[in-house]
Length: 262
Image (cartoon, rainbow, N blue to C red; front, side, top):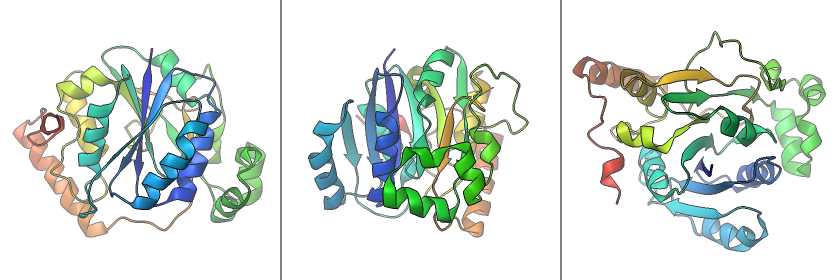
């Protein structure tokens, strides 16, 4: 089964370098990577032109004019550009564990969406990773030593199946068959600020469609690199109000979504 890995990206090339290095280490080989850039920066195109041939997987790039937060729009464009039967999503600040794709491939089946969790890498450890690129810095011991948070979520347990108490999709680490995204028209592009639209909204629509959620905790692991928060409390409140209104209206197939991209 071919997997398409979609990376939501905005401006941070040093982080992207670490993410692609993590994807180079994957133990599952049948995949492509699509950089979904909510911008159209010359530096990104130059980076891809310089590095694509060195990677052991196909690398695609979709972009759009930087005109405010339009993450959902570029994610839909990336879904349209994808060739994989199964799609996984990464944010541009999350390094995947070496068995990340293997676990999604092993779990993948119809009528389900799969979600993993993340280790919150400390500021000190993030600086070291950026300076050295040393993958050994992602070890559990290193996270303990450097004060990372949620480090227990980084313990790889391939046979772990206990349901997670924190059930729910996080946009930075989840996967689903492409056909199920098409059934709900992908991401809702009405959300134009960070939070809710890229996870809470698509989750409720998938559930309403009959898709079950399956936890990949301790199996599909990513490492979230430290950076300043980009969320606005007011924007989050507006987005939660929007999702409640859409739920009340029963709009499972969003009006402005995947079908707007040819």
